[in-house]
Image 1 (tube, rainbow, N blue to C red):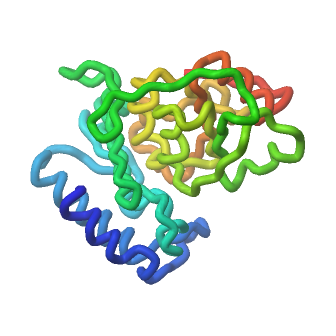
Image 2 (image 1 turned 135 degrees about the vertical axis):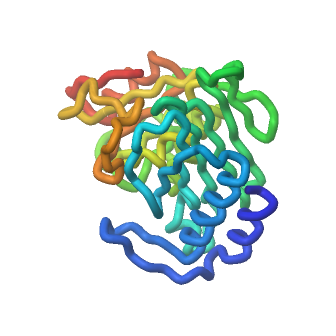
Length: 260
């Protein structure tokens, strides 16, 4: 990915033609090219594995091994030349994410991690160095990262400084590496959360779903024959369980929520 896909995407950043998908989100020529190229590269090494991609197949057929691919996580940033976007992949075993890979070419950062992967110890890494969450009391010198659909929390005082980055995977992974105490994504799809899932769990983060009508209904393991494009998962990630409970009261006041 880093030697074949990333250089071409860097070349096209801010210059690739833009179209709107049925759900209103953006897609570029670069997304479509990268989606196909990543699948080709993986198929050379893993010819029996299945694939779910943001720009292609959305239905999990129950295969024991399946890749989830988001060729450009942060397409709006990418299309404007803003250098916060990622190539994001996850490997599922029996419907559960066990390996995550998130490469941010403009930043020179590559995250990867294993969580309950057969034959691999748990671990989260940035550029080959082990990483983990950093726990602190919420304060005005600590960061919390929002997505563009979560700005309603700013209607009242928030206990941390706010950042908005525009890439779901990178937003969540700021917790894994200790940049932020917490991060929220309001409407992420499977391909937005699966790459970060193993990395964050291996880094010691608390992950909880805030979809009040769907308490107890979690995305993993994937349901066989379900079109994953129709489900989103209001996600809060924090440096530990205590902070998860603390921040959830700000994100969804007076609403129950459940961690993983």
